[in-house]
Amino acid sequence: MSELGTETAFEVLARARELERAGKSVVHLEIGEPDFDTPAHIKDAAIRALHDGFTHYTPSAGLYEAREAVAEHVSVTRGIPVDPDEIVITPGSKPIMFFAILALVDPGDEVIYPDPGYPIYESVARFAGAVAKPLVLREERGFRVDPDDLRRLVNPKTRLIVLNSPHNPCGSVLTRNDIEAIAEIVGRSGAMVLADEIYWQIMYDSTHVSLASIPGMKERTIILDGFSKAYAMTGWRLGFGVMRKDLAAKIARLMVNSNSCAAAFTQIAGIAALRGPQEPVKKMVAEFRRRRDVIVQGLKGVEGVTCAVPSGAFYAFPNVTKIDPDSKRLADFLLTDGGLACLSGTAFGEHGRGYLRFSYANSVEKIEEGLRRMREALKRYRAAVT
Picture 1 (spheres, helix red, strand yellow):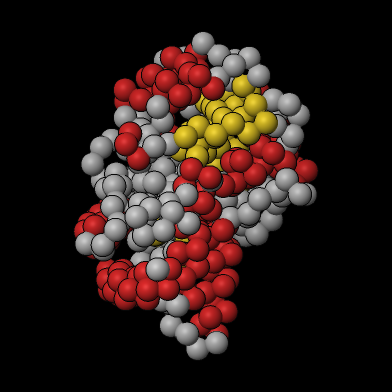
Picture 2 (cartoon, one colour; picture 1 turned 60 degrees about the vertical axis):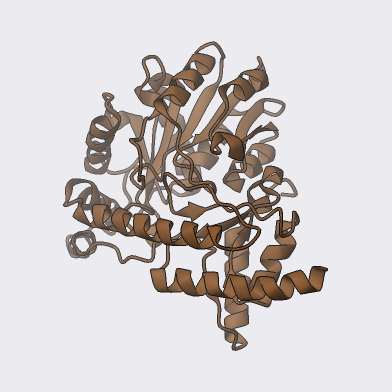
């Protein structure tokens, strides 16, 4: 248990809620959760499903009709043939991450993961007894994987490589050239790839390219995806993985031993999400683009702050080194003194030091108020540290 880390966003959220209960006003830019309501047609499908009796166990891999809908969706969006038997539906997408590592990694194997990156990759790799090897994402390369760095890390002990595009926390997106270079490296290795594509529908300036779409890579790739982000269904806990049939059978066995199955009525809602109108997704992404522009422009106007423009997801990752390289200390001050909840870049790995992460999954009004609070708090912070 000592090897398991945590997800700092939930810890900061809990601290912020405590401050609010004590009477302090807090602007929440810490949690990665769309502030939109789940589209009505999805909620209606779940309600109908409850009345129609979808309140019992399903097969551990998921209802066949739900896996069929996912297979159709992935086939179209990634341009690869997918069979329902290559799908495992889980309560949220995080179990795919957890189960893939448990199924593939033995003690002493090496897992390469992005740093900065979603902290659960490293946490679960260490929990499984693996040697976790950080693949550093650098601002000067737009926080995208450098194939040369990856090539140097891969060796015969490499069992799993984790990719995340669009990326949390940096908002970066891998290009086709990046993906093709990564595919070449993977093809020469014995490693599998966990491709975390949960944000693939939330992109602004480019088109998503899945590693699984590169010839020869489908059988080497586990696609992690779900409904939380694009369909504003975080609380529904519904995700899925796409993988080889033999591996899907093993992941389904892990489902048997842990969760039994995802809730039946949420799977029916998932079918409605995939096969129903996609206009709510497009409207949400358009609003995220507007918010992105507001927060990036605002951050660039703060003395001592620079900020790369995110190409996907809904996170800004400003460089605050000129204010204080200890971004954890700065983030704590912004919360307790300024009433602004954000995350230190170190919540996403050592190479996030000197950065903050802001989630712009909140209204423009809240974002602008958060920026105002940041500017005011920094005046006091500079006075305190000097």
